[in-house]
Image (cartoon, rainbow, N blue to C red; front, side):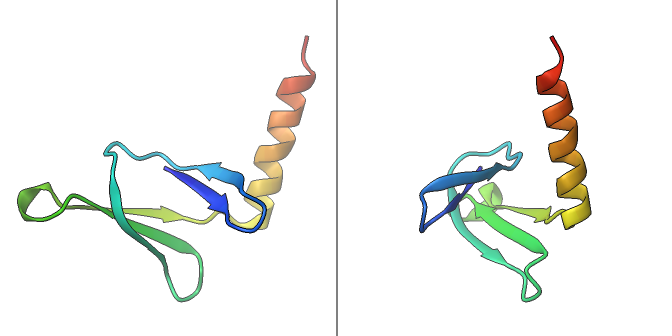
Length: 72
């Protein structure tokens, strides 16, 4: 599942999701957890939760990606 910035239309992050077709998503009140629901009812319904990384975790990941991109 991709999260998009609706003002710039940029993809912000890809989140792992093993089931396509989300029928609803919402953030927790503190903004640290994103929840998504798949399926339309019955046994096919699944809830997915993603924790938002801290700024320090995000910076560490980006630094690792930049270091990997700099390798020949």
